[in-house]
Structure formats: structure tokens, C-alpha cells
Image (cartoon, rainbow, N blue to C red; front, side, top):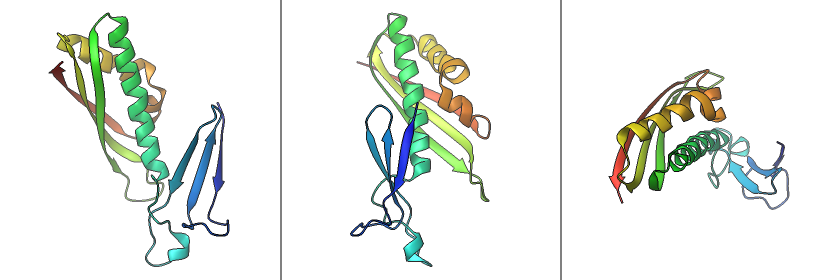
Length: 150
């Protein structure tokens, strides 16, 4: 896996001094920007794209939701939808790593057994999701879920 991240802030005509573009090995582009810096505006972003740490959190959510859907489908469960809302806390001092992450899943489908959903989330958390397993080295990760009949 590879990725190239380039600072766009030095480019003439850019709208943010802390903008970045990531080009992934699979050929996709993601933009990032920093938060505005009131004390030193030239060192801040313009809030025109997600922050890098937001993308890290989003990546963890995508990784675990992917696992949950796949595990349920492989178990021949009639899953129709899956979303996960992540809330987090970060350390007060540098490096401001994640210290707590809560993942609240909403899984929809027809006659989904709560035990199967709980098992899928646990399997992702304990075995399959590389992102959450990595983040679990610094953060306490908790989960919860709701099932919606669909």
C-alpha cells in the first residue's frame, strides 16, 4: 500500500496555507486542511477539507463497518444497512493521540439476531480491523449497537 501526500499551501493561488492532497496507490485523491490559526493565520488552514486526524477516525469507522457487513453477509444474515458514529477524545498534550473512541453502530436488516451483530462487531474489534486494533494501542475503544428492522 502506498500514498503520496503533497502540501498545496506553497502553490500560488491556493486558498489555504495548510492544505494537503493525498494521492493513494489505488488512484484516488483526498484533500485535507488544517484548522484556522487565529494567532498566526499563515500557519493555519481555512477549514476547507477534513483534518488528517478526522480522516484517521473516518478510516477506522470505514474499516470496522466493512468488517461488520461482510461478517453478517457471510453468516447469511439479511443485512440492509450499516452505519457507525464515532466519538473520540484526544490527549491534551502533544502528541495528541486518541485516548477514547466510542463506536455506535446502527445495523438494519430483516430479522437480524442481536447476537450475530454483537459477534460481528467483536470479531472486527478483536481480529480483523487493522485500523481499530492500531488505534487501540493508545485509545480505549468501546462499542454499542442498535438494530433497525428493514
